[in-house]
Image 1 (spheres, helix red, strand yellow):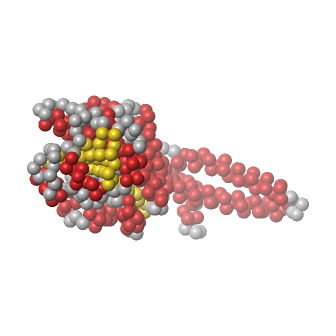
Image 2 (tube, rainbow, N blue to C red; image 1 turned 180 degrees about the horizontal axis):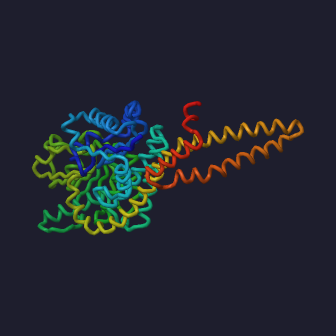
Image 3 (cartoon, rainbow, N blue to C red; image 1 turned 90 degrees about the vertical axis):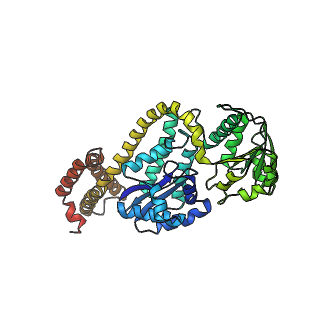
Amino acid sequence: MHIAVVGLSHRTAPVEVREKLSIAEQAMDKAFKTLKDNEEVLEVSILSTCNRLEIYTLVRHPEKGVLAIKEFLGDYSGLEEEELFPHLFVHNQKDAVAHLMKVAAGLDSLVLGEGQILSQVKKMLRLGQEHHSIGPILNRLLTQSVSTGKRVRSETNLGTGAVSISSAAVELAQLKLGQSLGKDQLVTLNSEQVAVVGAGKMSRLLLQHLQSKGCSELVLINRTRERAESLASAFPDLKVECRLLEDLDRCLCSSSLVFTSTASDRPIIDASRLTHLKLNNHLRLIDIGVPRNIDADVSSVEGVDAHDVDDLQEVVSRNQEARQKIALEAEILLKEEGRIFLEWWESLEAVPTINMLRANLEAIRSEELQKALSRMGPDFSARERKVVEALSKGIINKILHTPVTQLRAPQSRSERQEALRVVENLFDLDDLSNGK
């Protein structure tokens, strides 16, 4: 058995590739079924966010298993091998474990230390459990990665003041507005006519950061009014006008700054739409959706500037240096957590031998107990029989405790294998496993 992760992220692929590999909620069932049906895949779960798609697996054979995952990604995306494979990364065994720990801690995020990724790793664990696609190995790994992410945030300052994709998008708007005014600095957004399209988690964070950066009123556009009004109610000090998606054109005409974050699998704003509108202001569009909500062709429209998630790097790099030192502290914790998991994983090599040893001693115990009970005669009560049986089981457990503990203890693989051979020879466990 072999642990592997295959995927791509903002570090390896542009948004136009990542959006083709974004697996929506409604497509998860099919994706899991396809992956589980592959004979090379023993356990699997999927991490799908706006900046990454990663598939964590336990496979039978390293090369065949990884190739199976790559082929699945090719089929799902519709991309040719030469278009997709150069953007994919593969991590195996200890490197796969280290990568997941780093992801859960927020050290591999576009925004270093961002908090949302931890909830997304929790979701990956939940999805694997709900689809019955993870067993003891991945369940242990994903559960430990969640606890590691929590530990990093509680024992270091990495999570303190950490920014999110949404806050980076607001900061990008401030930066671009300042540049348009001839200033290389962030400026307040109190003079902007702001609209937010979408009412999900990312939009909630957008509203929070817009309010903190000087925005006092905005238009919130969503497919359903109920969800928009529910989100607006969480910001009583922010004047929010809720509108339906069919009012998008009117809002585009009256806005100067528009953020989009919807679950749409295709662009909702493109050049064709904008050219038919009479825009009242210079329009700046900032799209943090993946797949993209705004088509790349809008940049050809006069009076329109558009940015997507890949453009956030401009503001992220301004904040990154100060957080690098804290990240180094977090790396120490990650190495410790990775070592703990790998020691547990390697100790599983001893399980078959331990099970055979336990079965061997249990068979001896049961046989000798029956002989003793038969000699005691009918006057031996049921209660006394239970006491004697419990005594025999206790003796076996005491005898097994030290060798089992030693076989599971952290040690080199060669040392463990030598110890396993000694135990198997002493107790003739090879003959037992062969049915002799």
